[in-house]
Length: 262
Ligand SMILES: Nc1ncnc2c1ncn2[C@@H]1O[C@H](COP(=O)(O)OP(=O)(O)OP(=O)(O)O)[C@@H](O)[C@H]1O
Ligand SMILES: [Mg+2]
Image 1 (cartoon, helix red, strand yellow):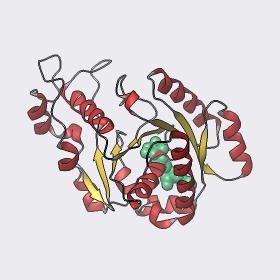
Image 2: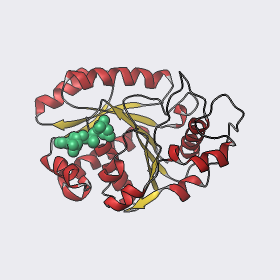
Image 3: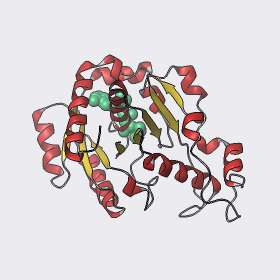
Image 4: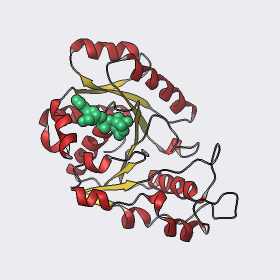
């Protein structure tokens, strides 16, 4: 089953793409879990979760009792003794929210205590991500920030691919190059690009030309309905059939290049 990470510069359309793909895989009857791994979490509203349900979601990193119960140490402590392989297999089922057949897990932020923080909350989050990536029965889609922080060595190899989202413009392309290099450093097997907010054929050509080493899966056109969806807290999947069709093409291309079911 597909295990996909989505990254890219801030504001390019990562969350929009993840929300579209999540709904498409769910519509086909797959079990889908979307992971919001962005500290500034907003995948719930992009997936169209009703505001009340979205507000009720507590990020895993803030579940202090759970973290202490599973790791044996209080969150916020460092250097103490705690379990490095806490039990996580029941967490997706118990602590995810669900809407339109998409399960959503919100990871939350781990305050970094120096580089490579080894604290109970980061151990629990890493174990959880690793568990979901190795578990076979569901499609996993991770909405990340610009980087690969949530995927350490060892975990990254369990991801089938990373999609770097770019918009027509040099800044997001530069970020894409950095992310693509990091992704291959930590051995993510495939790195692909998706162009978002594309307005013209020359935008497409710009993206193709700027990323000669990264296969482009497809494009999401610039869409005023995407902005409207964001304003209204609705899912673009329910508002813009054009973007859904483009996402379907991206999904098909991904399936073809990966030859991973689905
Ligand atoms: N195809 C599109 N056309 C027009 N606007 C879009 C499109 N895709 C996304 N947007 C808008 O751009 C903004 C950012 O989109 P989104 O939240 O998906 O990006 P992101 O990369 O996840 O951002 P962040 O880095 O803040 O998490 C939103 O207001 C969204 O509605
Ligand atoms: Mg986002």
